[in-house]
Length: 532
Ligand SMILES: *[C@@H]1O[C@H](CO)[C@@H](O)[C@H](O)[C@H]1NC(C)=O
Ligand SMILES: *[C@@H]1O[C@H](CO)[C@@H](O)[C@H](O)[C@H]1NC(C)=O
Ligand SMILES: *[C@@H]1O[C@H](CO)[C@@H](O)[C@H](O)[C@H]1NC(C)=O
Ligand SMILES: *[C@@H]1O[C@H](CO)[C@@H](O)[C@H](O)[C@H]1NC(C)=O
Image (tube, rainbow, N blue to C red):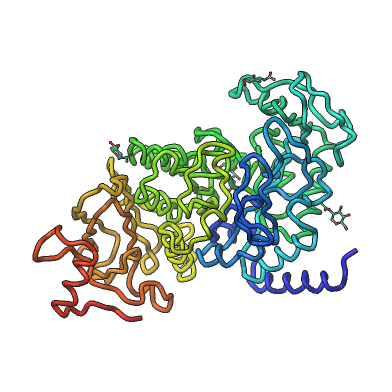
């Protein structure tokens, strides 16, 4: 039974939320930008920042997150995706503790390591008050128990709620051939330290129960969207009914680099969205000795293969991959990767710590507690993310057709990928490069504007005017990305309230840095600033 206070909080949240004028379906989600939070590693209730063991609990909580929402909101994010919320196993295992939330034991209890039911409901109410959507990670492929590595695993099924009997599970087998779909769906994943007892989601009893569970979960806690963990490892037929029962948008984890394999989930109407694992690899490679041509090729393949690339989540790292900076820790490179995922077609998805340039290797080292960064809002990638989220949010506000206007390639070569996204008036023209901080100065001409249009490069707050063909000159330097919007689009946004003329010094081409350019502008008394 809810207390009347909780009901009042929930009612207030519902009101604030319905004030948006639309339910959080697929279209709403496409307009959002998602920050991925690993609860145990985001913030502690008391805000303390002591170090901890990476394979054990570090003490992050829902309340800790609630207290630090400004950090996320000030970066311009409009949705968060959080760790699973149900009760997990509590033992220490050979592969660490269940700090990540993926080792479900009881689907009907909340994970008390992350807080109380009130803490969770308070968090959701606060998110909705701020118009931030909540996506929750859910595990449907398996329930989990610690085991002693003796095969076959001895499972005490009576410990699971609700699947408290062997009959709800596939018989034990190990996935040994990961390319065999049937085997990877029906066998048990990674049996070591913990056994991931594989639910028989083909069984109508099991799928009916999971559908009714998720419906209750979403409505009890006002959840706005789901990430379905290991979606590739359950049978196809299970997915659409589960998503429909939830009543909200869902993306499912389909770990593959094959457009056919990923896109079939949309073309067969199995899932509305997926994290974009297709571009993930070529994008990482482009900054590590590869080429943007391969990113462009994959982008085309996804566009022709998938029904709806606008419902794919763009990312360059997540809690399952090594950090982007683990392969290449150049800051300019990281800025370019961030720029691409924030401005590309699809839903930007940034994993906590990426904005602090964390560089951990594979699990668990890619799960650094965020408090180690001191939540530095002046970190270069934090500042960049904040600007670009605001640019994207503003473009959508000016003209919601921005979301589904296909990003057009203006230029692609080994070192650059330039695109224009959005209808005239709210278009964003951007170039990413893999030249790195060592990149030298050079000019590059890129189109995408109207003749003589006034434009602003928003990462340096410099203004320029397009020529008679709508082409602008980009003054490339130090491998920095470039992002231009029409000057008029920035009116009343607070972004680049003052701008200086975009150019290298005319006296000594290519010889002056940012400060030099500013000094010259002042010295020559140019009309150096636009004030909005
Ligand atoms: C399961 O198969 C994998 C190969 O996919 C192998 O590395 C692992 O040792 C096997 N584990 C068991 C317990 O059979
Ligand atoms: C949702 O709340 C109802 C009513 O209290 C309860 O019966 C149900 O078990 C809850 N579902 C979940 C998933 O918590
Ligand atoms: C996706 O495309 C397929 C094949 O054209 C179609 O059957 C399906 O209904 C489409 N799904 C959506 C969500 O548009
Ligand atoms: C950038 O791309 C070029 C051409 O493909 C490649 O040779 C170079 O190694 C890449 N740079 C980085 C930092 O990956």
